[in-house]
Length: 94
Image (cartoon, rainbow, N blue to C red; front, side):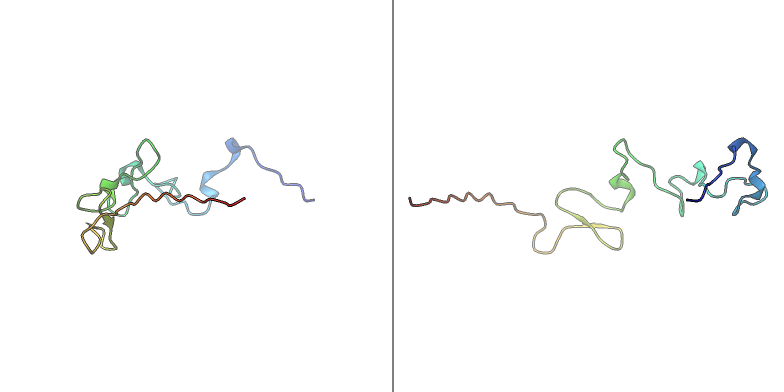
């Protein structure tokens, strides 16, 4: 098995890391100013999910779905989903 030595982070010269540029020493991270900005990143809610208001335009609810053009629409045929409860009883003869 090969032994791997991990250097002390305090001793790493960040200018030697790949992907870093002059003036912005952490280009591998997105800036806070890019949050909610075009080509940036979406904020998360308390449940670590992107809020539906950030996904598309229109009304997001149980009767609509998010289309590919980022708008909410009702499904064809009246919209919404109808759920039916079905009870099944099975009897065995002895």
